[in-house]
Length: 421
Image (cartoon, rainbow, N blue to C red):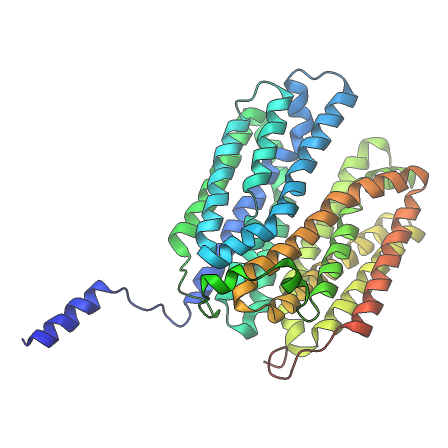
């Protein structure tokens, strides 16, 4: 055997084989599975945080509410502030290691939750969690970059479907766990869910499978917040995501009260409200899933405008009727409309973000989503104190204005980069 042939064989053995053409599907599957496990794990225990704080010795209901509210709000607040920064680090050093960092911190912090002895310990851990969170936005970025450009909406929709379905089933499993093993051990199960999510990313995700061009670190460092906002349609999509998240989260503080106000017996209010929330969650997952197909046939601005209008119609039905059937139909319209519009907005923004700014761009979008998530319950609760129908009226107004603004202002994508595939 000649020397050149031997060197070629050694070189072939030393270098890893290139990824297969369909390896992007495994990447998307890995990120989807990790998102589902993480979001499910989080809702195994956190919905029962008021009960846990009560077990830690806080007896006054007002104090329980205060500790719970601050503990739940501080993490998304910090995450909203830091998401763009983590995204920029992902642009420079790679998304995979950033997600692994975040998931490792969640495993440790959730396990530590099982051993706290005072309410302030919970708050301290939630603060630390906010400092290291951010895998949600990075997961969307990883899915968007792994998929071929024409499949980006489907990939984003699949991850968002997992992020929506996890919280739909997590509290049910968590309630059973709390009954069987207690709330403390439920946090250990949550840590185990995050550990499985970490394994999915470490083992299955391949950094080489991406349609984004390699970026010089020096160039990545020049991507500023102002640069990101200047991308075509980006600010409009950021406002759309904020509005959609605001409406989506506005029902939490007022829907059970509205269900009881419309004549449902007090003992049945949790069941009826739970069914309505489940309809919203499942139909939202369906909206995320269907959005990719819709974007192959219609421009993104049409999908967003029509979907937002459907969500507005759902809010209107809530405002004018209180029967179980109309409220179920309203929940269905809200879920599908918000789910489809959210995925379309992320996809439209993702297509105008240069490859060197994907992490920063999706981080900014996630910040807008988290601000809507954190602010909506406070405002809805305040407005609901005057009249619950005011909350629904505000939701209708926001969705109508959003639909009009998108139709009037959004610039269509150039031919060949959008839904024509």
